[in-house]
Length: 239
Image (cartoon, rainbow, N blue to C red; front, top):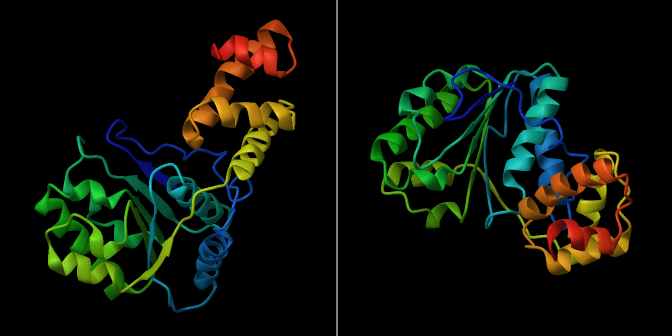
């Protein structure tokens, strides 16, 4: 498994905690099942579902699911690569050349290409190469339906319509609480339900912010040898 970012020129491991097991599915169970079934294609000689597109607003878990799919691919000895697109990046479109030789190609946030025709052409060409080679599958994500993306290359929008599209649905507050409890457990922390509920109600409600709050709580609970209680959380996070 290889991850490519604008900050790192060498391959690095994708976040090991971003797995299917740590993803709270909510109303997205069908998407999770589909992504896991995609990898079963490589047990046969034909890749049927070679193009997929996931879209949602931010902080719903698109990147998490791409990480999870790559993690599962690694366990199944399937070659994979993850690329996150960023508007202000040091990468050039040439980074897409040759990716068709991976079995699983995950490209995150393609809406970031709205200002670059060069990148759009490069992505269009990659899609064509993956289709022609017919040995791998390409999963992409964006922040809105494919036909509404701010992309000026009509041929690229047309190609995106070829694939299977899924919209991810935001978690409910109860599901956010469940996600916090699970992520705390993965750190060896016991988070009571009332503490998780307090955090969801009093901290920024996007999952990145909620999970990042665990960094401070984990560090301070270890230093102070304190349990996760509402008074402790209020004191550490200044709530």
